[in-house]
Image (cartoon, rainbow, N blue to C red; front, side, top):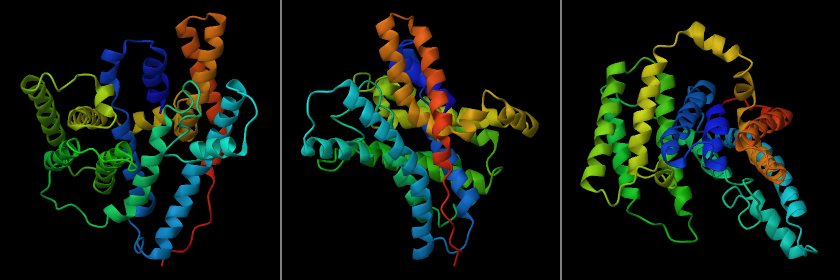
Length: 338
């Protein structure tokens, strides 16, 4: 979350570094879903009876509240800001209804009723909700012991490649379907990692890294007119090149993680610079839309340097995220697992 708020959206929303080279830093979403899958295993995934209808509904309700309620408060604030800033006369009942539905629906996320960066990052919420709902269904069987990461990557990569050849017609949301399938693979992988943390070696990850890098280079050489190195273009919706790119980064991160001791990890978690993003990461993610939009609006009006606007945007985002963080810690009472 710190990487997204500070580096990624500083790059793509404010242009603090060129977007072309900056697109090679867009590795953040697969690790987020890997963490989602791992967190599911640690919290729910090892329990018996989790697919019993009552237990599954209970899981959906509790997780849905934790994800949607913070989103609901954020989009209410965003809709108010849009109404104030873009006031265009009396609001009819129909206009109010259209505006409310546009924001309340995480698939449309304010489309047609937004302003500046208020909704740019909200594409994440709908696939996050769906992948979370799918976790109990897609993790019922363990992967056989002989399976290696390169095998998993090959299967997932072929599926992503095939999806790239298909365009789902309206009213189906093509990007939502592709995002959901793409990030479901990463969440499933996270579940496997949490279930058996030492199952695969550095060599296994290194092989994935090398093969994925070779695949990217080969695709660029064989199809130079249809393959672009701009990962922002490859990310929406995620295509085969973005999958290979994500494999390279994820493998590198997993290799690097083996070099970090538990003592170092715990010390980092206690750092006052990191702690806000750990305790209020989802809220900070949501409120960066307001933080960046207001900083850009007032900073532009005052003629501030872009780097000053960037710092103000980060500070305002963290402050708002911490203010509204209690919403993401709402817990409904748990049912007893049957």
